[in-house]
Amino acid sequence: MPVKMILDCDTGIDDAVAIAYAALHPGIELLGVGTVWGNVDVELATRNTLRVLDLVGRPDVPVARGADGPSNGGPAEFSLDVHGTDGQGGAGQDGTGEDRPVREAAPVTAARQIVELVRAHPGEVWLVPVGPLTNVAAALELDPELPALVAGVSLMGGSAAAPGNVTPVAEANVWHDPEAAAAVFDAPWPIVMAGLDVTMGALLTARHRDRLAASGEAGRYLAGILQHYGEFYRGRVFGEWVCCVHDAVAVAAAAGVLDVRLAPVVHVEVDVTDGPGRGQTVADLRGRYRGFPEQPGAHCRVLLEIDTGIVDEIVELIAAHRGPGEAP
Ligand code: RIB
Ligand code: CA
Image: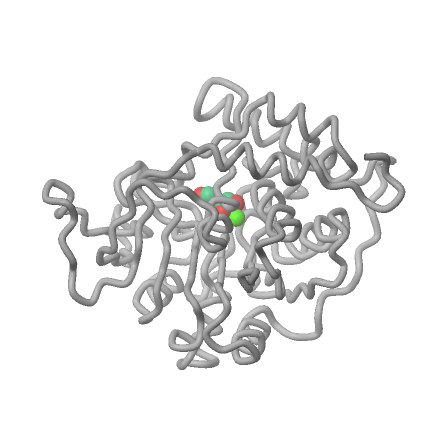
């Protein structure tokens, strides 16, 4: 049986890869996608999400617009240097250079869509938030029984032992809305945390990009938007053209197709202070040297080591896709 999934994205270049992967994977039933501010504003995130779903032939997947800023009412800060001013590396158009028309978003909020879809399939749905956790925290407020009604939450966010990517200790999705992240990590549902510990090693290389570029329309689109993202990583992080496909790792984990090598269940607390630790996910890894003994009450499985061969599978799945009328 395919895994029922709701994505929540701040689309974003790696979000676009994750959406395409989730939408095309035969083991995933993508029930809906919510959009949230983060990499870009929520309008752009919504538009980008709709476009990617259209490109992979999934106009049936409802897309619900969500929060436009952090839950504490503070200002929204975006990551345009990483993802480009259009959130798609400046290449978020079709091959003609024109903006591709996109359908309308669903007439509900992303938080409400989460509640309705989870209530329609109790015990079956994986929530996969890969942006700031504002919408998921709002869904918890709408329906405090949600934790007992989901299969789990597989999120891209945080870092247990790796450095942060916004501050020395904070990862972007948690940094953007630490209060929302704290509400999500504190709620009593099973969480899988795909944080920077593993996603910084999930690298899409120039060989992968070229494979996508030589495939169908969806693959060519992704190859185009990834160009900017890889340049960011070359200039600011790795010194070579590679892309961290952070968000697709959380999708693969929820779908049960990730080869997980080390992932203890530990307590995780989000720092919501205003000091230098703000946005840090403080994971209790003290059991590392004795095989991670059980921590009573802990409900967060923190991915520490995975098989990064998942990137080959993500690329192959997308590169194999052909839209109607495209030659195989
Ligand atoms: O820190 C990486 C995360 O921040 C990814 O989800 C990326 O898309 C951005 O949202
Ligand atoms: Ca994201």
